[in-house]
Amino acid sequence: MSSSTSSSEPVGKPADAAGWKGFSATLLTAAALFSAVFITTAFLLDPYDSGRSPLRLKEGVRPQGPRTALASRGRDPQFTGAIFGNSHVQLISPERLRERTGIPFVSLIAPATLPRETFAIIDWFLRHHRQKPPSAIVIGVDNNWCTANPALPNEKPFPFWLLSRSLPEYLGGLMRFDLVEELSRRIEFLTSGKAPRARADGYWDYEASYEVQGYHQRPEIRARLDKPAELGGGNIDGPFPAATQLEALMRSAPAETKLILVRPPAYVTALPRPGTSDAAADAACHKAFADLAARRPRTALLNWRLDRPELHDSNLFFDHTHYRQPIARLIEVDIAAAIRSLD
Image 1 (cartoon, rainbow, N blue to C red):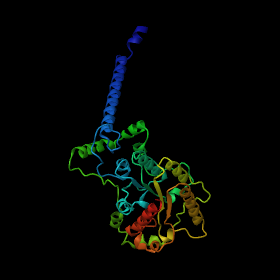
Image 2 (cartoon, one colour):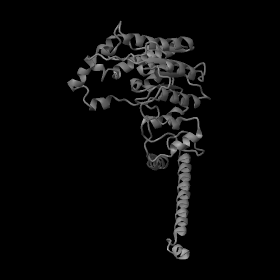
Image 3 (tube, rainbow, N blue to C red):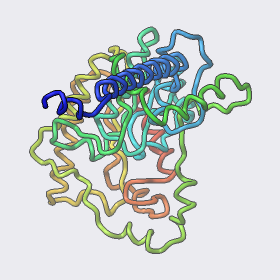
Image 4 (tube, rainbow, N blue to C red):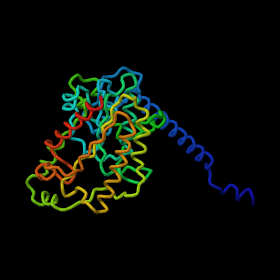
């Protein structure tokens, strides 16, 4: 009876299990080989021109967003001055600053970035300018720098892996689906003599984009400027970890590097009203960075969050915090004067 029962069991189960195991092993091996080949190819072709590849490749990258292009721009030795921040200092022209100061500037801004991302970009720039120390660094310090949160969380995706000091982290960042398409574009850029290159100094004038959206013609958009906005940051009692961390980071910069902190302008209805908690928060944040400027040699703080005639002209703003070229040029004059004053 026992043999009869045994003979009724399914036939071939061990063989099927062995087959699946073999198939799984083959699949895993193939996946590992593909990953190794992909990582090796991406590392050698250096899709964002990070300088990590041992190969001698064409300089620069194809036209793309600043978040990935800034790795190439930030290590370019021709630039000894750099502008950091988000769209609130995006219109500051590196070319016009060069004309006024003689310092070749690069714009390393990235829209919607906060202090944490800016620190990563500054660190990248400083690490790649050891042989020829930076002459000047300009940083836009908007109300996002007034937070009391020591974690300084970022709100938008940012490729920290691309600027990382860790090679394993960089390699892990290369394992991205979108990199498959990017590699083909990289090959075209490297092999074609006609492939366009992203602007080396990183300047990106956003005025045209706003004009396309009708910011000068739609009454409801212009009417928003008449409504008061509180932009002080809300942090009255501190601490101000962005100021603390910036000061620590700048200790890695050469002593001769000039640091210009710019508190970007806002339309008059977004300026702090005296006697309000918003004004108290704005003053507290300003003091944190003013104290930093006082402690660090060759450092200046430019405060454009003050009532000025230009800030009453609605034609010079797209919204409460995004201004047009005429104001950008005035800020550039102030930056250049501050740089000269630190000689």
